[in-house]
Amino acid sequence: GNSVTQMEGPVTLSEEAFLTINCTYTATGYPSLFWYVQYPGEGLQLLLKATKADDKGSNKGFEATYRKETTSFHLEKGSVQVSDSAVYFCALKREGQGNLIFGKGTKLSVKP
Amino acid sequence: NAGVTQTPKFQVLKTGQSMTLQCAQDMNHEYMSWYRQDPGMGLRLIHYSVGAGITDQGEVPNGYNVSRSTTEDFPLRLLSAAPSQTSVYFCASSYSRRGGNTIYFGEGSWLTVV
Image (cartoon, rainbow over all chains, first blue to last red; front, side, top):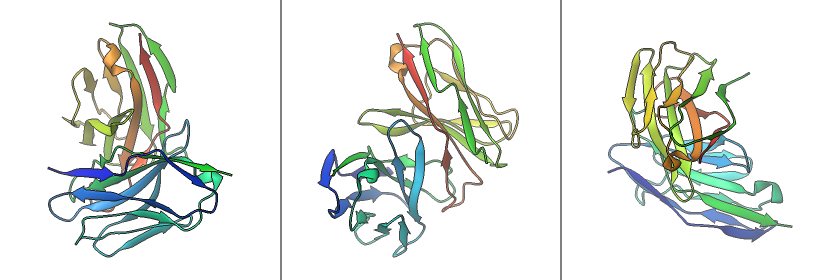
């Protein structure tokens, strides 16, 4: 079946540290891949996306590259800030399907 | 821009009570859906709709009903609330089902069943 696996948290980093949150997927066909972010007490916001192999999504200093050969879409940021503290969700959407399949989420806490 | 609007934001129900979570979008989106978010489980699809008059079940549909009489509105009904339905509920919409179309989420409805 289709599924998304992402690293379990919580992840605690100091400000300006390098961030990687691993995400791998299992899917038939050629899914689109997404990262959503949820700040405390809020809904989900799209952070970035990639729709085909080797595409790189980027936004607000975050990046992720769609790697079909390793079925991965790892999220990276070179220097995190306290304001990046949130829960990050990796998700996939199959072509022709309107719904997302989510990973379980990774909570990130950034300390000053 | 209103986007996806959910009401209420917080609700406490007693076991056996019924209620409706409202969802409206003003983007003329074809596709709408409901998810629930539980600790350590990510988000799971409850029901979805590909257009007015068409609905279908997702991964966890039991205990919930939906209808889609207009393009804009997609309410979620709990007919007889149970403590297992304590969760955060998110409504979402997108223009179509095509691959990279962005799915937009409402701000969530926090429901507690006691």
